[in-house]
Length: 168
Image (cartoon, rainbow, N blue to C red):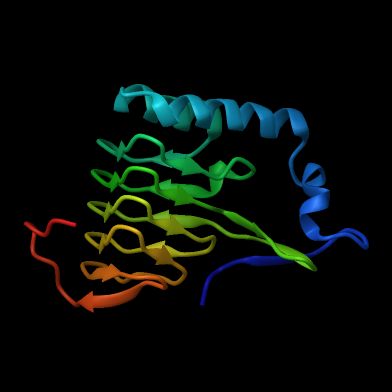
């Protein structure tokens, strides 16, 4: 079960039509500009600094966020990434989702020493435990326990204990 807050749409239109009420357009534009810049920035240290200081994200030491990673533009401060974790190329991490009648918001917690493969989507309200490995092109729609190998769309646990030399 994901940890998300449910909020009904503000009127007769679908929930996305009211996005500007969640976070002001100026803040959303600022967040987007920083995230867009970081998508192409090769410097991991500079990226982590910008994520921490300008977006309020909780980024551990020695985190590596790959090129083209797309983070949530409305609520990036709800993302936590533990020490020494790797977020693979073109991964998307969301802390909100719009539906027709409601929107949902929830934190994403990524533990220490986690590897998330390229082209993965992480949905709001999930926790990925320390030492877990998530295979490329996965849809993380539920919690992942510590130390497991998980992959697929939707994600499934493939192996209970991961060796240190697993490559995804």
